[in-house]
Image (cartoon, rainbow, N blue to C red):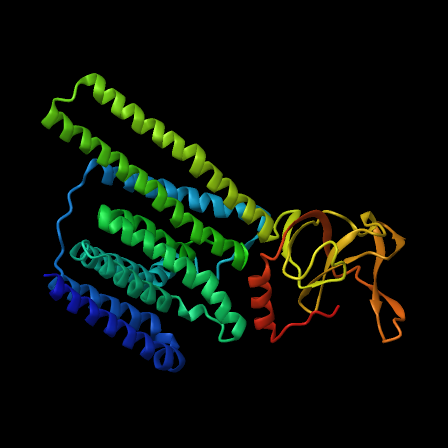
Length: 413
């Protein structure tokens, strides 16, 4: 059976890869207006063939399955409440799609059919191959490829555009498909539809969308499915504990006292995981989002160039405070400013007050081999003041990416 499934799985992978090549090099450039429709047709074809090759296994509603469905449903409410609450800080943008009823139906039809088709195919494939880790990996891979193709229309065909597509689409798609494959294998297809359908169609329905920016939406769409996996696994573990208790009771005559003690140990272990894993993990994610997103007054920035090597060097991530007005800065304050798409750390050498909270702020600049000095006005380029906290060298990946996207490194201020 496994060898037969292996041939089917490999065949699907070849077909999907060939379709991806056809799509990227012919369909998307030549007939972009029909790509969504063609993708839907391809997904329908996969789903229909899946019915014949893998069959649709009946999956009964269990107690833990019901709990996971409720967890995913509540999680979706929390997700949308969170991103729209963040919109109060970042702002909102008007939806480019029509909000008229017939227009909404027309807009969501193709993505809705595609999302449902993918989840039905996932269910048939995963349940048929749930004993093979390699097949599960393979299925998650080619479903991720299909998801990326469905969203390829938003890519900007530039070096920077492909980078943004990779971080805001491909990376979240991988985490999303890991979650959905996990839920499918463990409990079925219902929770997957509750997750994927709202995620797919909400952008076509709501009148305004939170303007979260590329970085923040990427962090959220990676973190959210990761947290759902953690909590779903807890529910499944608790269910396995209940089954073990029933098994022991039937075979060993487990006393009421022993059963209570067993459950107490399990409960203590869950509390241990909540306080030592879940809460610290959530807090760490929150701190990372706050520091790196740039939405708040404290911001973590990777240093491209340092004029104060004794304080920080290229590659260091420094924490800055962005809440100062120009008049709040003083001579000898160590600041970050941005020039030529590079973040530079330097010391303020001169300040000239201009009233109304305005000031001209200058750093020293060497201009020739005789070390003659002139001053550079950074008043409009200044980002914030260094708080004294840094993480040495961890920003190098960010800097290398910035250098690559801007066409090379430039360490001159």
